[in-house]
Image 1: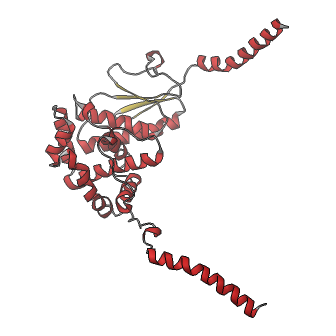
Image 2 (image 1 turned 60 degrees about the vertical axis):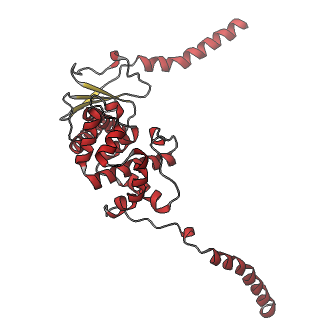
Length: 293
C-alpha cells in the first residue's frame, strides 16, 4: 500500500513538471527589426518587434536632438521574454555585432524601450560621469522621449499646484520612484513639470550645458546651480512658484483645471442648507396634514 502511494505521488510530480521542463527546453525564436540607430530583437512576432523598434528610434531622434548627443555604437535592444535571464550570454539572439551597445529590456512595453534608449543617451551626454544624473531627470527625459511634454504628467503637476492638495517631493524623495500608481503620478508629474520649466525658461541649450558640466566632473546639483543660477535648496521652491505659469499658460493644449466644487463652498451656506432641511421636512408634513388628510 505504501509503495502504491509513493508511485502515485511520483506520477503526479512527473505530470506537473513535464510542461515546465518542456517549456524550458523550447528554443526561443527571435525576430528582429532594424532601424537607423538600433536593431531590436523580440520573441512575440514581427509586428510587435517593428512597433517597439519604431518607439526606440523615435526616442533616439527626440532625445538626441534635445540634448545634442549621439551614440557612436549601433544599439542592440534585446526585449527579453518573461522569466529569461539577461545575464546568460548563451541565450542572446544570434547576429549581434561585437561592437554593438547592448541594452536589455525586461518588460514588453514601449515605455521600457524608450527609457532604455533615453538612459543610454543621457549616459553618453554626461560621460564619463553619467551615473551622477539623478533618477528624476532620467524619468522626466524618458517621458519626453514619447513626444515633447506629454499631457499626462503636465496635467498631474498642474493639478498639484492648482489644487494645493499636496506638496512637491524633495530631491531626496525624488531618488526613489513610489510603488503605488497614485504617488507615481505625482512623482512623474513633478519630474516632468520641472523639465518643462527648465526648457521653457532657459531653453534646451542650458540642458546641454548641464550634461556637459556633469560629464566634466562637476556634481549634478552644483552644475544645476551653475547653469540655472538656483541653489539646490531653493530649486523646488522656485519651481513651485513658476509651475502654474510654465505648465498651464505656455502650453495651450493643457486645459486649466477647475477647483473641486467643495473647495468653493461657503461654510455659512452649508450650515444654512443643513439647518433648513429639517424645517422643510416639517412644513411638508404640516401641509400634508392640513390639506391632504
